[in-house]
Image (cartoon, rainbow, N blue to C red; front, side, top):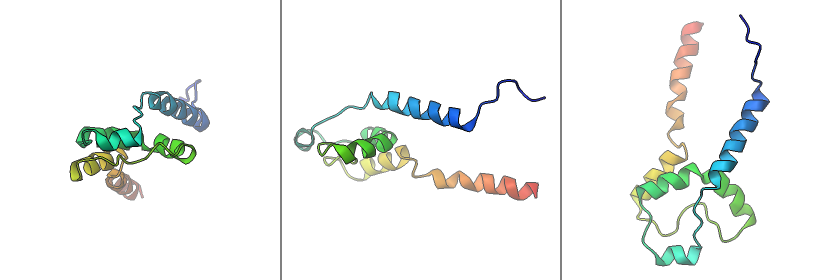
Length: 105
């Protein structure tokens, strides 16, 4: 039975975009010069920066004081958090979908 309330793809996209914009309002902005003088960012900051990276990228295009990647970080742990937060491991999820499609044929 088909549902009366069909959600169309554009409505879902608009909902996700609205959620992204609202959640990005929680992003903590730090001036670059202040960032370089403070304590280095670690894994958890890298994870958060990775999650908000798409919004940061758009803002970075219009504001020279915003950077995508924290300059004052502690190295590998920050980079690992950033990679996970930005969805850098997403390529692993596609293999399960390919297996399911292959079984259906």
